[in-house]
Amino acid sequence: MAREFARIEASYPAIHTERRSLLSPYGKERAVLDEERIFHLFDGFRDIVPQGSVMASLGDPYRLASLSNCVVVPSPLDSYGGIFRNDQQLAQLFKRRCGVGFDLSTLRPAGAPVSNAARTSTGAVSFMERFSNTTREVAQKGRRGALMLTMDIRHPDVEQFITIKQDLTKVTGANVSVRVSDDFLRAVEADTDFTLQWPVESADPEMTQVVKARELWNTLIGCAHRTAEPGIILWDRQHRYSTSSVYPGFRNESTNPCGEIAMQGGDSCRLMRRPVQLREGCLHCQGVVRPRSLRGGHL
Image 1 (cartoon, one colour):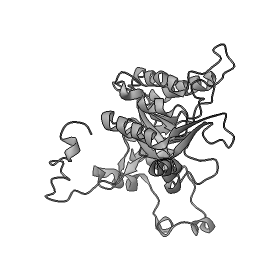
Image 2 (cartoon, one colour):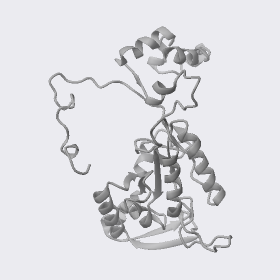
Image 3 (cartoon, rainbow, N blue to C red):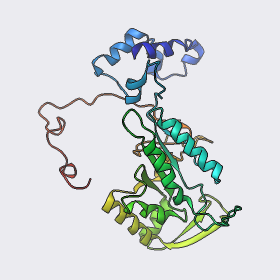
């Protein structure tokens, strides 16, 4: 791993003096990352632990594999071609060891008019099984892929999305989470109506539907309590905290399969961490004492 990291580091030219002044104090003083220094950082994993895909795949010329753990792909275009394109992207990424996440809010809701022989759409939720099955089908050296499907709380199909996995035989190859907005939470708190619409961010939507915000919230919380799904992403809050979502053209769309990182379509998790130092004598740190939620029953 150190040799491969050093090979890439060496491909970048030295920073010119006038640009070096723009770096942080650490950046100005940092020594060149050659193979010996990188090896020292990796040795024994005292200082840095590279993510799993790097350790599994780096320097392996005999296997097609990504060095990114997870990817968010762009939301599908609202057409069968767009849906099939996302499905094909899933297969290609899964076979390269990636997990994938994307948002379904771009797809028109059930009952919306279409220009094909069916006259109306079966809705965004109807395509979740397709993506779930692709996740289960593509093997990754004995394990299947990981998929996150998200939907905005404003989408007219959101209640069907929320309840789909109450049937434990449905969408078994994907995690699901709802992108919850601040205005929805304010409507829940005030116990007022809330307007669903599609397109979800349009100032002049094609479809609208008025619901009781608190009733929808209670459905969401009830499902999460019973089966641990769907998850809830405080979507406006993550935009305010995100370092990527503030840039024009790079607004986050969904998250990786476990929901830790929100990303824009086409971005990936580049994971690396510093090891946590165990406190001597601390049974929690040593894994002897588990949180109550892990001692049995549902998480």
